[in-house]
Each structure stands twice: as structure tokens, then as C-alpha cells.
Length: 241
Picture 1: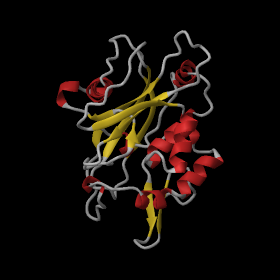
Picture 2: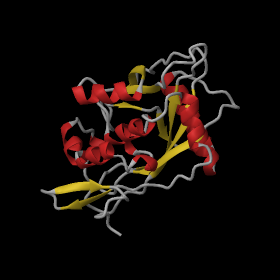
Picture 3: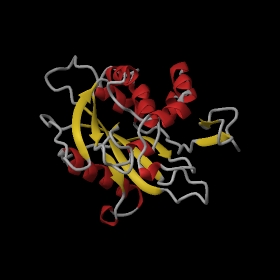
Picture 4: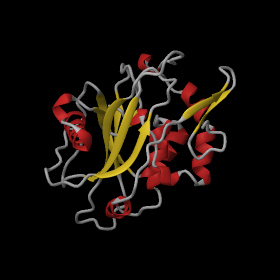
């Protein structure tokens, strides 16, 4: 699973709430439990592994007035990467997934099935939402593509009990409030992506807004010293060239 290794939709960065979250990034990184695979890498940067995740949105069905809800899975506390963190279902691209962009899509569908027990149909639309590359200072890195998709009707998530131990549908605002209250552990990238969904009232509206939108890869960078540092995103004036 790779959701925490990637980051948020670039269209969301101008919002003051996102700048405030970004400013707290270094603090949040040190506060939550870190797995061995998240250790700092002070040598040559690792090559990012291709990865994909599904930002699965609940279908309105008979409840057309239902607010947008997104699926989050809780990773096991024994995970080497992002233990105990609530994330989007996803993982690394395998050889069986194929090549090119189709491999990312196949990976996203496969990981959703394996980790949440939800099967997307062959004709189900996957809309590219964002693409984030793990900072070079992290030992395990991903080049992760995030896809928006509508959940099949009547598809309760079923955690696999190995990588994922809990699951739930959350309104983005409710998940962010739970994070602030300390009731839900979210990584910085997941927070950003939830924030980018806040303007949308329905799942269909969110997907329609991202169709045919150009998505640029984003590589966060760490600046400063070991004792005094922060993570910056490409829209930051201090982002290294």
C-alpha cells in the first residue's frame, strides 16, 4: 500500500488551509509512529517504485443527496511503512500489472480488491487525480499515481486482516476533523488529498471536475539543516531549482 508515500492534488495548494498544513509537515512527520521503511536516507536517493492507489468514492445510488464519502483503510500497527495510519488502498506496481499507464490502473484495481475486498468492473472509470513522488530523504520511495473511482453499489469494504485491519467511509471534512482531534491518524499526503475534495458536494461532481485535467508529478523536498528543516512543495518560493 502506498497512499502515504504519495501526496496531494496540485490544484489544492493555493488554499490557506493547505499552506498551514504544509508548514506543520515536519512536525507531523515526527509526531506519528514511523516504520523502519520510513527511516531517513542520507546517501544516494532510492529509485522510486511505480505505485498506484484508488481514491474510492461512495456512489450516491438512491441517496442522491448523500455527501461525498471516501474509503479509508487502517494499516496494521506492525507495518514497516506507515504503521497504524489510515490511507487509500494501493500499493506497488507488479510485473503482472503490465506496462505503461495501464499497469498503474491495473495495480490500483488489484490493490483495492486485495486490501478492501472490493472489485471494480472492467468498464469502471478511473480518473487520474494526482501523482506524487516520495521525498529523496526517505528510504522507501514511490512514484504513486492516484485515481478517482466510484465504488460499486452495495460494496462494504472488508480489510484483509494482514496489511489492513479496519475500514470505513468518511466525509473528507469528518476525517480531517478526526485527525485534528487525535481520533484518526492520517499522513500529510492523505490530508492534502482529502482537503482537495472539500469543494465537491458529490462523488460524480468530483470525478467530472478531474476528467481530462493535466496532472503534474510533485516531488516534495527538504530544506534547511538536520536540526532545523522543513518540507517544501513546488509552489513554495524556497523550493530548490
